[in-house]
Length: 125
Image (cartoon, rainbow, N blue to C red; front, side):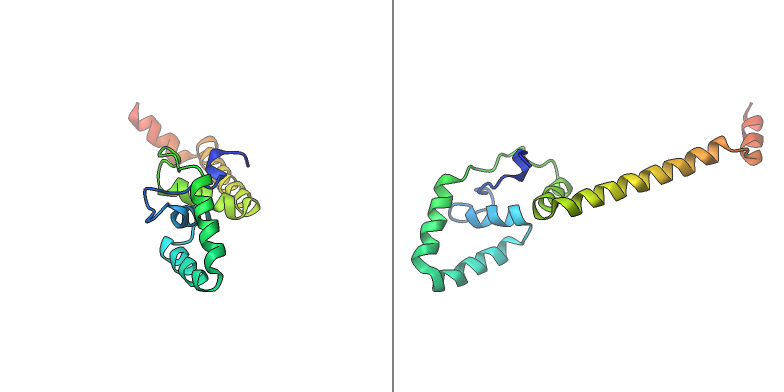
């Protein structure tokens, strides 16, 4: 998982202060509002530690590239890869199996002896 799509980035475009909460939300797939609320709640219990970690991440993390995702569907796919690579691989395999099954159905329909299709082709000649 060394793809640039599986790395953590701070999201300055959707961020409020430094883009750390928006980056965490993008990385995990959790809504940004919930990440910000959790950060505020943790701020009351872990105050200085959380502030230090927030600013350290803000300065050390790379800014999110604009070309990272083509559309929302690709973004959700890569969030799924980051959350559970094994589950995403199973879903991709299942999609390919479904496509293969449907293609085999189409192939068997056109290759099999289909008198109705043959009659229609003959009428077109």
